[in-house]
Length: 200
View 1: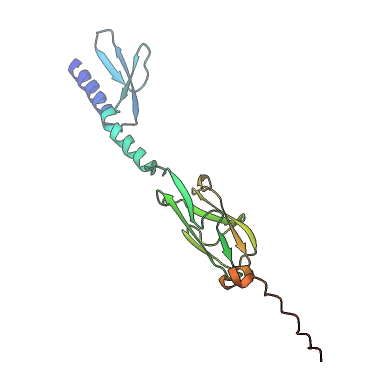
View 2 (view 1 turned 135 degrees about the horizontal axis):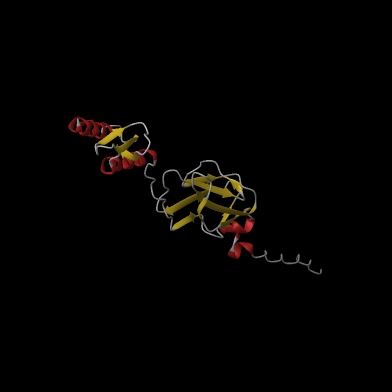
């Protein structure tokens, strides 16, 4: 009788350990008046509760790490830009003529990273051609114009800004013609007075 009770108790404990790693099983243990130990899944007066858990920390750890790897993919490190420069036109450069063309060229170090955007502004207005390193400007009005570029991330946060560049559009004048410089600009000598008629 004692042996069968002990075997039953061992079977209950083994079955509890074989349950899912997330299940917890309560077992009640008590001794009768003959000193025989009994186990049951129901509470009995005078019994002591034993909580059996089949959790295996060493087996659960890799699963948790794998789940974390799936739910939290690695994010690429943000690129740190050391410079953003408008290297053409030069600052204070002048262009002559109503049909003058201004070529704008930019460079960044390091080059533009994926997901970032390069925006260029002329007199505060964004130029078409996002992420373009070159722009061609025509039909500009006479006077001073300013250029500025900025790199922003996918959320629109500024990463780096270039120094502004100012250039000038000027109209050609007669003095711009090389043939109208130097001796060509000297006034013509006065004509001699007409000869007087000789007396008879």
